[in-house]
Amino acid sequence: MPQHAPTRRICRDCNGFAAVAITTGTRHADGSRVTVYVTCPTCKGTGHALPAALVRAGR
Image (cartoon, rainbow, N blue to C red; front, side, top):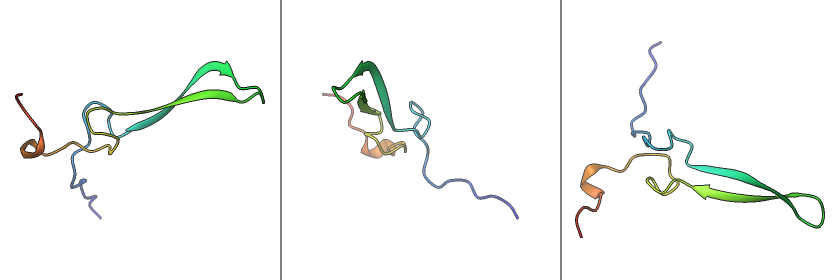
């Protein structure tokens, strides 16, 4: 059977991985690591590219 292509375009900046958890290297008092959660600023954490008509351009 042929595979279908995704209907929505994947974000070119994050390649579909829109949210990540990064450890800072420091630890809490209980011994667990401090993590920072970051989302892609281009797609706003959705993982998909916005249509060109919806992108705000100019001032």
